[in-house]
Length: 387
Image (cartoon, rainbow, N blue to C red):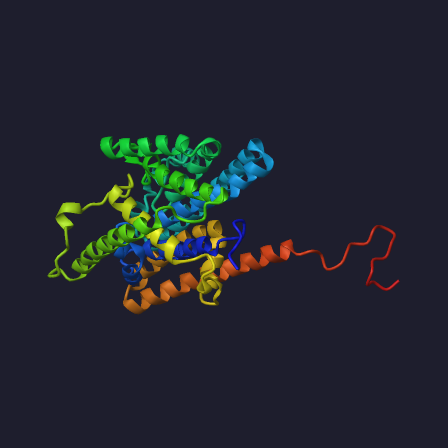
């Protein structure tokens, strides 16, 4: 039986969970497993997956709130979620700074301060803290949550615009994206001379376009239009990008192997979300939408369950993954980064993420369960207690 439009789409949870694992792996420098993530085979990486699914699910969740309870309530819900992300980001920032500073002191290795971009915090902490609270100070690995927070802050306007007509949102978003690609405008960050790693003026297009697809789902449009044309075009684009990037990956390991179009295409700008990243990514979205149905059996399998749970507890697992990836980097650097040590560090980190997601899911499930028995009123014995 086909899933109802309002039932949970486990594809979103599964691929978001997979993206979180890839983010953990990719954040460990010179990690052998990074040769098996999206970054090794595509012009894009897990960041696009994370932002796309975030925009898509935001439209699903808050679009329904808008229809059911009105604009004010939907706006309050969006801003409440943005606040939750902001608080999580602040806590993550504090833990990250403490983790790096402790490692620097313990191993007497100031290199980490520069590598993790916390030296500016140590030079003028009173300024850096304020800049961090303003989302302007973004140490290494702490740059995607500020983008997500900003996208949610402006999302009520996007939500209202989508309800009136999708083009009211799509056209300005696309125009801004094109302007960024042509002019190269950026958003400055702290300290002076730095910019937002994920330029929100460009990455907003991925978030907004994903939200429009989610909005189409709410309106009952569950089938991809022009599928007969889109599928072969997407397959060709994705296959071409896959083969080119694979040649680059092999070339990086074996210099004699030619990197196809390496000189002509490199570097592919991630900060401003180059079209060379965006187009192949959307080709993959089309392929997944057409070839992986919502009822796919593997989504219900035991093997997929840990990834689904990670996707459902995405905020907590993302923050945990950042802390664990930095910890793994320090351990591998100080105690040896051989293949077996790398595999052990990856296995340990992923296991902790899986177990944490399972624990959070269990806790939330129990919290939603009805009480086993009612609490007795004062002066009256409850049922099941001897009188």
